[in-house]
Length: 115
Image (cartoon, rainbow, N blue to C red; front, top):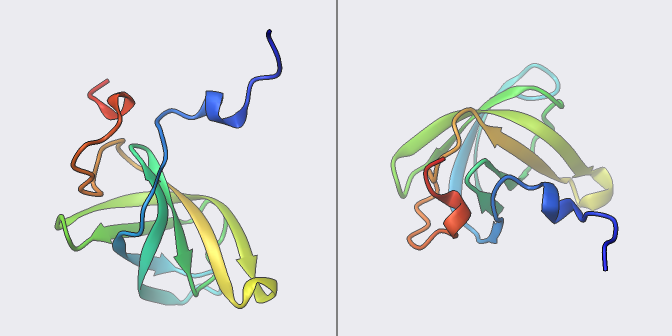
């Protein structure tokens, strides 16, 4: 039976729910330079969902560093949710500048392979 495609059908790579320590740096929505130690919620080859205490603007540039792998990349903030109604915590979706496994996932899904 054919139906409407799900959001998952449009994903470029499989998401993995995992809490990975990351550092997020960039200008917050008020234009202030911030550096925050936090964790990921979901990761894939193309980006991540990350919990942060600072509000970032949609489309802004941040640098995400993964201390465990000593890798970092510039990212674009693709979406933002949360804030005051969520206990002051924001969720940001970041898109990596170059699709790759900077997260250190040891057995990534097949669709994370070189393409």
